Length: 245
Image (cartoon, rainbow, N blue to C red):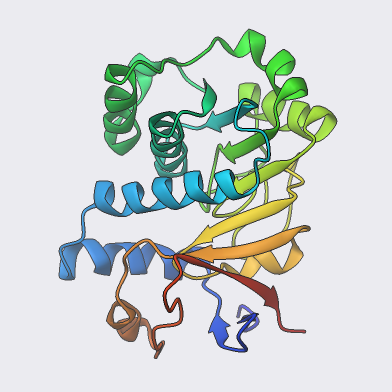
């Protein structure tokens, strides 16, 4: 049985943390019972990711590198790339797959950003841009880790850890198990993590600052999994949190 893990906001509000299984059920309830669309929640994630990144960029001319996988986390990263481009920031996007191989929501987000004039750069150029970036955004895997990262994903994680001056992870740093916090292989070492909806139990093992962002899920969505939650974002779209020891 998974140990109960909680986090606390800077305002003193205690938040429960979710396992991967619970988060999957939350996503299902939000979509099937409440009618929230995956692209709708992904758009909220991408916008918050972009605005959070802007808060951490002191030079508006500096380049932001976004590393995106082929799943939902990657779709959030691609959405964030578009929002940053819309605000005039220099964005360099790298994908773990050829754009033609993307499916579902990640494919939909890429079609939009491509029409807006931003296309993925070849992975062979990633190291050069990671070295020079003011910020690297990790949107490679998310909460669905299945074993140690392999192939281009593993290579990108190693580059980030070796050369990135500042790294912002979306939801959970790639390579960390979202439930246990274990790292079966290489894992991103972030300066900050912007998790979504509620924190994941595995974030207790993650270094760096931690924030949780609103993606539009009502508190009532959590009731079927036994979580009673009052609104906690207030006027903000994300809040800083720390693990309760």
